[in-house]
Image (cartoon, rainbow, N blue to C red; front, side, top):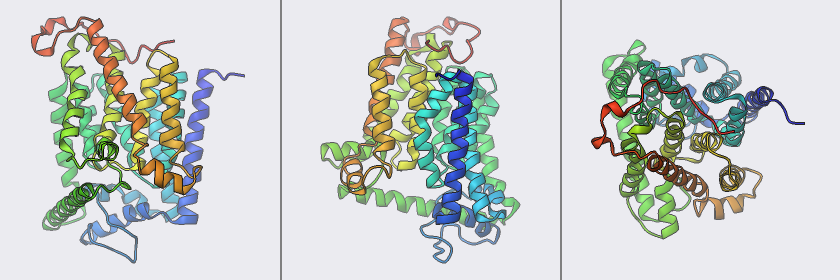
Length: 406
């Protein structure tokens, strides 16, 4: 028996919360997950004036690589015992993503989109990563723009950028709403405030030293990526840039592929001025941005793909249904999520899925299809390039998000 849309949505949201709870217990009680240990320890290091980016082998493996602001934001989780803090972290991340998707889409469509991203969400939480929350913040910014609240949208993007810089790509979503300047200014102001907020618990000269140390470790990590690129290392992540290097057997730098990807991302915005009042067009841009920030991020990791698969889900439920689209989504779930999970033998994951960058391929294919669809939509509407368009061409009163196909 088919469940009503509202019950389907309630069921998948319940799965999100239960999955987050189970992963939190598994990683917090049985395993004592290392990434979350790094996050928690960063708050104490910040408060005591210790170098956030130094090695602390007695506390955790690997290094802290996020901003001083993020260390301060971890305060509530640092005060709680490890396992309850990790459960709260996971439930909050999963719950936030479920809430924004439920606000973005009608119940049935929201349930389907959440189901498409579910396995990647669980995988991201198993690494205690921030990517689930980052996806939610980008969508929250889009919802704020749709409600004509550009300042709030800028604040959400700034909060995401205080964790990872790429959420600022979401500023592109302000262009069709003609709220670009206000959104950019709000994002800049909030981000500046967030950068200084650690002064509540540390001295100015110490915070400056933290930022210098963060820059040094980030530069060193970028250099290590370049060495790996030159050696044709295949066991790394790195989005479309690394995939192209693996597939073509070349040692190209990142920037030419990133430049092409950025041009393809921006092109529908520049050419589609007459469609700026079209809700389906705007939500297509949201799906595009969610996939782009993973595909063209040279530091993208496997847990980052929860952001991309959220974009895939939004694209699928807001597009006309067709066997081709359904096949693409099923392939994406199978390759991106299932083939990268423990359900597949480690040797196959390592020597096939990782070696040949298969995790990137389905998402890249869907993103290219989406970009072509946006451009064809513009062509059918008879849109002119933005530079040649008259501002009066824009229709007043944009429709609410989104007009979904049935």
